[in-house]
Length: 427
Ligand SMILES: Cc1cc2nc3c(=O)[nH]c(=O)nc-3n(C[C@H](O)[C@H](O)[C@H](O)COP(=O)(O)OP(=O)(O)OC[C@H]3O[C@@H](n4cnc5c(N)ncnc54)[C@H](O)[C@@H]3O)c2cc1C
Image 1: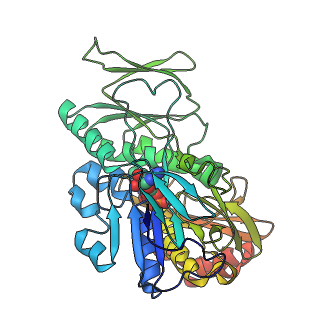
Image 2 (image 1 turned 135 degrees about the vertical axis):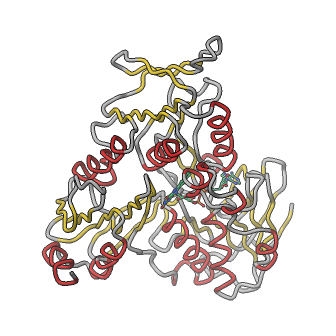
């Protein structure tokens, strides 16, 4: 057993010269390490990562790296030198198999065991598989650098006019569709819901964002649930067939599935942590004494401007902020950790437009368009969301300055009526 600490500090803070094991070597895990070091932690930091890469950024995978405008190295978040500067002992290609939260003991699949004063759980999420398509060779997802490189290689191999079929018009599916269209592919997107992105942005805005696809030559089919995906190895001219529940069949050279993610929590079975679509944490990000979580797998109690929700968010900015906060929380100790209560933010780049959202609206919230039009030819608009008279969110398409004008109102928990006036007064 590698004992890097005592593994027994109860709810007390991790001491500056103590020990921390971070499981998951991606955005949230790296930010946790940075948060610890920035907070004065000088002790031992071990990071365990299943992938064989330095920690890298995922957003460029469906955008610049897939498009070929960035070399993969540009997505790296921390190379060997940076890891050394941070004093992180990164164990590449090693998988944590179990956690004993009370003992703060992590056991790896290869038999190695680590005990520490604090544990950061940051094992993220993986793509949800399309039922029935799991066994079909070559069906793509985009979560890792390896996924992205494989997909790009296949598209280049087929060449211009490559028929790409994207299953799912969520943010990742939509970005992949936009990037592939930019590469000269013939792209079809199949979405099971009548309105793409409706759970995240509501029906009105979802329809407006869905319309971007047609405007850029991508065939978006809504209310189109996939019933079967077949690999047709005997027919190299159409290696895949995708059949809708209604019987329509699409031939494709490439099939990409983007139907959401599932948190990587299986290794925590028997750990003593509560798992319910993510690891359940308190508002200070503690899942147990001495054990914090961060990133896509964390479900925490978000209290903000009179709202209280159990949230699990799968976006970059939250994973980044949460990692930093989780590192700091270990140093503060469970009783004194600051509540993690940011204004959620995300962005998505599609067809040269930047979609940005602040806040956390519900799909049924009231919506008002306060700048541009939902059907504007240039695709640009700003919409605000409200519930019970309060401003709950803002979505802007290529209007960053206007979006940010609403931030102070979201922080302060302003009323919907006040928000309606913001752009009128700022011009
Ligand atoms: C293609 C793509 C594009 C995106 N674009 C945007 C965007 O434009 N805007 C936005 O806001 N967000 C975007 N996101 C979301 C953002 O990248 C994620 O929110 C972020 O990566 C979450 O970071 P994380 O560290 O929590 O998890 P992950 O990045 O999922 O990292 C978890 C790491 O833990 C490892 N791991 C898992 N299990 C174990 C184990 N048992 N032992 C050891 N290691 C393990 C995994 O291999 C992985 O490396 C995008 C995501 C993807 C995939």
